Length: 154
Ligand SMILES: [Zn+2]
Image (tube, rainbow, N blue to C red; front, top):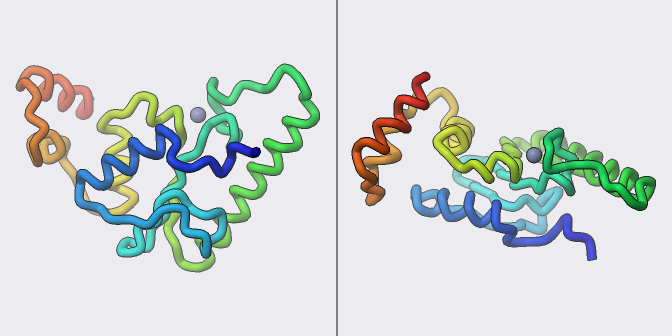
């Protein structure tokens, strides 16, 4: 079985959990859309793919080249990449906005990734980090929050 369509991968769950906690509602793996997108936010006409770096050929250290059966893997992964591109083109042509989030970005989940998603869903809107850390029940100790905010501004 190909793992490319594996559902409910851990990185995807993290994105879903975060979206849900922010009040975003979505449909999953919609079969009637090209590529069966992972997360469909119809209200925002937006689609988020959470891609595994290896299976979708990300240009990063997690997508290292297979050592055995090179030809097989190169073809398979090359096909995956082409299919991804085609699916995204089709979605865009149908008027969807598409965001690809990579597994490696989620490994270091932080404000950058939250900011990326928010900017995608609300283009042109300015967000301040404060809102995310004080906005709901996440009450971390103040030093910690201050440190994070500084990091963001630097
Ligand atoms: Zn990656």
